[in-house]
Length: 376
Image 1: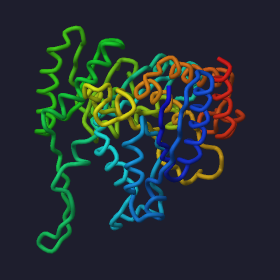
Image 2: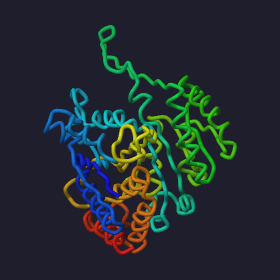
Image 3: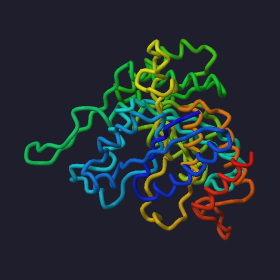
Image 4: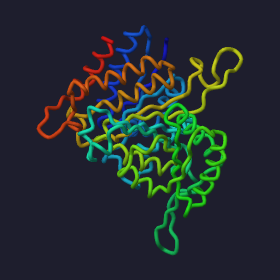
C-alpha cells in the first residue's frame, strides 16, 4: 500500500519520540512491502517562533491531504504566558476541529512485564485493559462565549460548557461499538447531579444504549470514577465521557501503567463517504477514517534533548495509525507484539525502570522495537 503520513514533531521531546516511531513505521513498510511517504510540518511553539502561528496554513494543508497524522507534543515554559495572544495548544485545538476528529481513544493496558512499574499493588493492576473514549471537539474547550472581561472593576473570565445531542450521540456510539468487540460493557461518566450538560449526556447515552441490548451500560459520576480507577481499575472495559473529564481521567489512568510514556492515543472522525467514483470525499487516497495520533504525554521540557524519553507511547500510537487509518491490522499487531517483546526481554527506559535497574535511551528503545518488527 502507498500512504502519506504527516509528521508533526512539535516541541520538547516530541522530535525525539516521533523520530523513533518513524523508524518503526519504516521497518513495517520494508517488512510488509508498503510505501510510506513521510512529510513533516511545524506545529506548536516551534511554529509560533518560526511562523507566528501555532498551526501554519501550510502544515494544516499537509495534514488534510495526508492519510494520517502523527504528532509528538506541543508546548513548553517559553510559550506558557497566559497573556500571550498565540499559544501552542491553540494549534492542537484548531487541528482537531479542522480534521473533524471528535472521538479520542486512549487505551490503558497493563502489560505483564510492567506490573511492577505501577504505583498500585500488582493484584489491583494485573489484567487491566480499559479503553477511554473522550469526546474531543466540544465542551469547555470549544464552547462560546469564552474569554476575559472586566466586571465592576475586577477581572472575570468565562468558559462555556455546551453540548448538542448529535455531538454526544456520535461519540457514545463509538464507545458502544468498541465494547461489542471487547468485553461488552460501557461506563458513561458525567456530573449529572450538578450540570445540565451532563443530564443531557446521560439522557442521550441511554437512548443509544437501547440500540445495544448486548452491551451493559452504567452511569458513574466523574468524582466516583476517579476513585474507582484507583481502587478497582480492572472493573472497567470502555469508559466514554465528555472532553474535560476525559482529559483528566485518562491522565490519571495512565499512572496505572506506571508512566505516561506508555500510553498512545488515536483521534478519529467519521469514515469518509464514497462519492461514487471510488474515491472518499475529503481524501483522494483512501476510504479509511481520518486520524490524528499522539502519545498522551506532554512535551516534557525538563528531559528534552537528553535522550532518555520513552518513545513507546508514540510507537504504540503509530500502531493505532496503522490499524485505524491505513487498515493494516496485521502490521499494527506486529508493532504491538514487538513492544511487548522488548519489554519482556527486560528493556526499560528510565521512567519505567525500577530503582537500580539499568535503563536504555530513546534511540536504543526505538531501534530494538524496529529490529523485532523487521525479523517477525
